[in-house]
Length: 397
Ligand code: ADP
Image (spheres, rainbow, N blue to C red):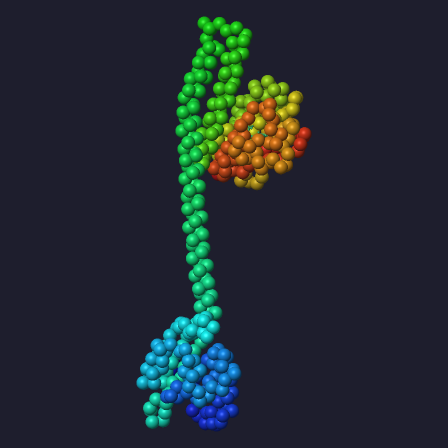
């Protein structure tokens, strides 16, 4: 059934069927829709209050006046629609621009249809209109907003792509350069080690010291190159992590013994304070976790005080994670530097100018930790010391 076929009033109550003008007036004042009834000369027969308000006709007595007299600028296409309707045709439009006197545009949605006299000839037309300017403006605003968001998103994506390309180029460059540097450096270290250990080469004290210096600086450069290579391969997403069951006990004792000689040389005491179950197994990449621990232990020794100490401790956070902690009795790190030291090539404000370092170790550790699903942290107190930690997953069966 079409909407127009559904009866909207009862013919039984003849008393109400607009038998008097009051009822008509009541309806026309209160119907919340703009409706105008025109005769076949297009003169107003009846209008709703809403029509009067929508078209600002409050000051005019429009009944009996011609529609074109009210709207002299009405476009020809609308006149055509009216005369078409007077011939018995129904027409409608969902959104139509209506020129306003002030030069603006009112958007309306309308339906126009003929009404019939008792002899079934067309008595005139009825127009139903709804002003949809606000809705239209909202739609235009929304589509403008969408266009701008899309434009901005494209710009951001382009900027992101450019930044990623620049980053890839940087990582490639670092990786190539590091490889190129490693080969001659290996030769330098190889020849220096040969001269140091060859019983046929007799070195005087000065020469021996110089060779020591070459070896020390060369090894430092070598570890720097290795760290840069690691960092660039992480950034290029080329780092592979090999997770396995790792004995906490073995990892800790091996790491401590690897830095033992260095600690002795610096007069630093090393303590293994781990009191939790030594048989615990970690779920991690053994080589990378050892690399992190070695860096933390080396720093704890490097940035310590005379006769200071370094402790390696561990505690179970919950059944899934263990916190490994490296604490020292060094000069500490200012609170303002605690974030900075995890950025490549940044060192603490105190600069430790006399202590050898490049500021790559901690950023590398943090990136390795992230890649392994671990978290790192630090707390420090000036003149008392620092504590660096890493939370590592426990191997559960
Ligand atoms: P490097 O030691 O080669 O400079 P790192 O990235 O390992 O590089 O450390 C960054 C900086 O953090 C160091 O230069 C130092 O200023 C500070 N730092 C790291 N560990 C400690 C520590 N245990 N005590 C005091 N400062 C530290």
